[in-house]
Length: 104
Image (cartoon, rainbow, N blue to C red; front, side, top):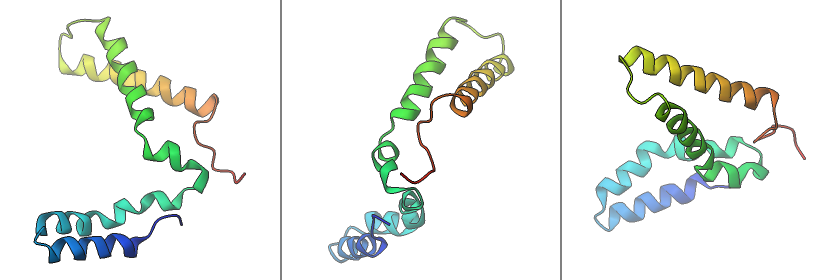
């Protein structure tokens, strides 16, 4: 793993000692999730720590829903967004890999 759960716990303890109880509690509450990236291979670090992937998905959703303009109801919006996300997923499954789980 290329992160340290103990260092985060030490940070939370230090923040708590300095009177930043809310910040310390937040770190402690989300500690398992904060360390979840360590389950991935180290070479994925740069792609995992950025939000580029989600930004790209959001940009594509905005681009394709803008064409429609106004939706008659919420269900029609959900159908279109679901279809777009299925298309994106299909591209990821069959196309070039953003993350490969094989060791290099």
